[in-house]
Length: 445
Image 1: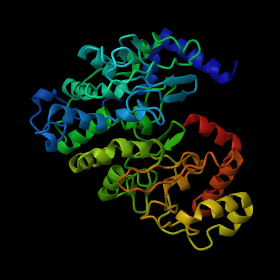
Image 2: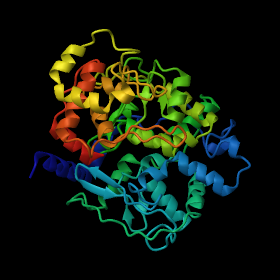
Image 3: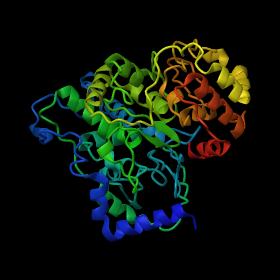
């Protein structure tokens, strides 16, 4: 039995025996209170409602409103298998203790949610209580718990209009004790606040709207906030960056060196709505998927509200995520040493990469192929560089440009070589990715 397995089992046992101590250690005083300030019940709030669909949809029919909220909550991303029918489930989540598969949420009565009552739907959405047992927190119900009844039921109304898909769920592969769903009831009591959103009267309507979008619907913290031993988000380091699904979700706090403190509002808005901003690189992996399936459908006012809220998150420094260089790589920036140290990487880059990225790293695709100054290339782990080579970076039909996947064409050793070459040539610090690490990244994503 591996050390990691022993640790995980011991942690699970400790949660059952003394979860209150773990809750205090993991959360800290007030860690779940993202709104801060003076909070009041939504019905007593005098400003514009921060919840629900934006004013642009005020006259839209209920299904259109529900569709907008479903997109804002990014439901399709997790409930759609690679190449599968949207919302029919079957996407694998590879966790340290096994694999879990997303369920079918089409209105099929036998294998989907067509037979669920509104009460059952809201319980699953916000409490992690499914009709057949407790849900694992791969379903972000600890974030969706802030969602109002009206918004949750609007999402259900839209899902009810989809074509039913009969698709039996794939059994999870968790080993004991992680296959005991009853333990999730304890996890929920410790880490799910079980509250609806309450506006902060000390903040603007735009901030409150952005807080609701970021925390309740878009659940940004599920990827961008580190997790504790029990796989709950550690809000004492809110939005400080983490690794999710084998990709690094970077620091998005107000820190100027390692977060987004130096980004302009326009750059943040463009990145969120289009998946790229000049000199900031392009979204890939889960973030690229979030842009393609969710964020690009948000109205300009909602994107602006998200920017307002993210701007307010306290700065946290993450030294392992170095500040990217701006603009072109300096003359002679380790070019000769990079070429000499990674001849295989140079060969692959020359054969497959320079057509889009160029030897300068500036690229020629409207800023989408820029390597210089991007956070991924300046990350010394080169996690996202290797991942984007493996999986590519599909773009939306709106811009029609994409980074193709090369995982099928190159071995683990070749991908490691080209990733190390890219960071050595264009980054602040060379990486040292190994073929074994590349193999692990393939399994995690």
